[in-house]
Image (cartoon, rainbow over all chains, first blue to last red; front, side):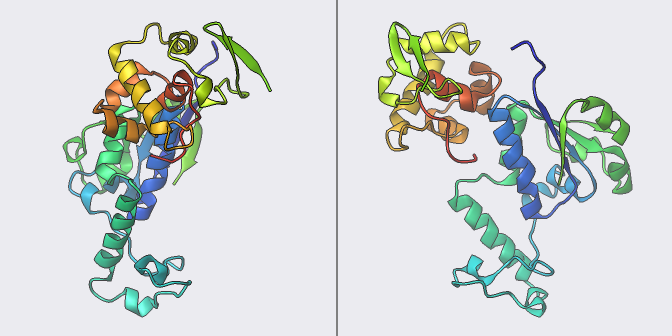
Length: 166
Length: 106
């Protein structure tokens, strides 16, 4: 048992609601199994740790060919026409549907889920280049984000880890 | 199938050392399994979690509840849960309580 602990690192680069969950679910599973977890947020992924954005992640139906009407309880795999997805209100509508589904499954909202990971020992970092590009500061991020680091720093701190890009 | 003697009782275990039949488990086994898992002593808080999981498992086919079910059900915080059962509470709680690994992702 003296061997070094298994480590996984996630790179979260997307800010859409559906793309926020993979790292949260897998990270939580990893922590539950005693695996060290590091998460690096870059580009749109910064929305997942941005205080102003974390509670407002959305899922747009446009250009999402997997999103079918059965989300709304219509059986089968009838698609949502792209033009319909572009109508005003469709993105909030799809977002509300997905949030409700998650709630039904007992999956916590992103802010609460992320806090669970932090409490379980996950280490969160923001990507310096993206932070600079979006003119953000450390104060813009939720508690639990340890630091703003460069890609090089990230590589150093994840030596020996399995890296998952999302 | 592998067997193991815990607290003087021989029980069937799987490859990972989990007790196969939740009914084989008795309270006296918990401290011994905990020690193997690196938990020196079971405190009142540990027992609160173990007892909750044992009770909950009756409706889960002998499987341990998920970590979120444990924190919601016992009022013990995530932080505390990870301190009480360090390095992998999902597996450790199940093992000490003589239950199967939790099914479910939260």
